[in-house]
Amino acid sequence: MSPVAVRSAAQITGIAPQFLVDDLDRAIAYYCDRLGFELDFKYQSFYAGVRRDGFAIHLKHAAKLAADRAHRKQNEHLDAYISVSGIRGLFSEFEMRGAEVIKPLEERPWACLDFYVEDPDGYILCFSEPKA
Image 1 (tube, rainbow, N blue to C red):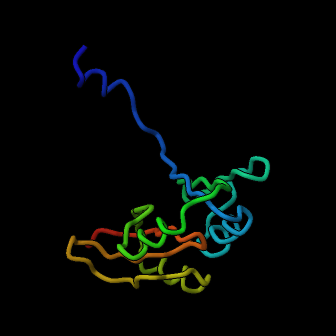
Image 2: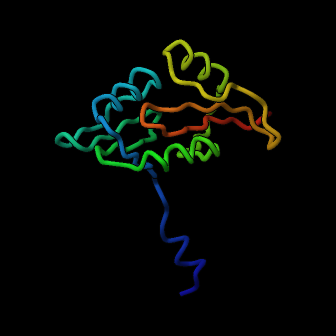
């Protein structure tokens, strides 16, 4: 069977990054209250999923290296790149909700309009929309 035939037989139907968090309840609250996600599930006291518009982020209570978080932030390494439509409205919503915007809504040289948000555990999410 050729690689093309094998590829056409399967399809990715979803993907969810897993973020290690210091405080699971605080992380859930941030994603729900500040970013408008809904709690999808919570498993015991160490694992949860939040979802918005059919897309999920998983949160796991576990240790992470503070130096790694600092390095990623200093160098603007993204933890999630999230494609959206209606970016101006989303930016306004997040501002009203009190999200931690670390890079304002701007046009980028790669033909996108985007902004960055940081969660309480230092994860950086880029929300982006291609320019029309």
